[in-house]
Image (tube, helix red, strand yellow):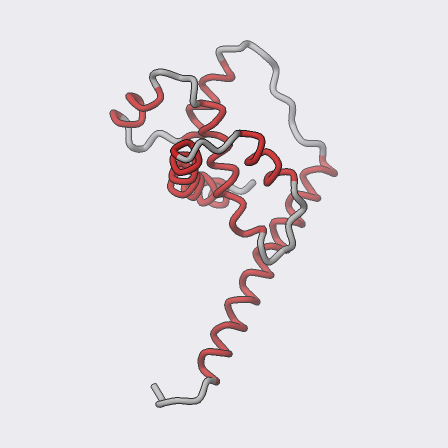
Length: 136
């Protein structure tokens, strides 16, 4: 991912993912429900909100960390992704990268989702502006 796309996704996961995690945790929702949502193939119109589930899932992975809340309280710029990176690095395992084909597929899906979202916004704007009523 390009750095600005990664920063955007990370920010959304931090804001919306943590809120969704807290809500799911509060109502006792099981982890497998979030896993099932992540495994669903989403239509392009709905894929824009995947960060609700990815952010919640990242929080679920880190939920056992007793220092998580303390670290987030003392360092507001810390991200879930940075915390996960730190936790995984302590495991001393080699990371696996996406193959070129996997990366190309992910990029195509992300570009398709962004294009679909932009088109949906244009369509909604057009519908609103074409509604009868007083002129703006």
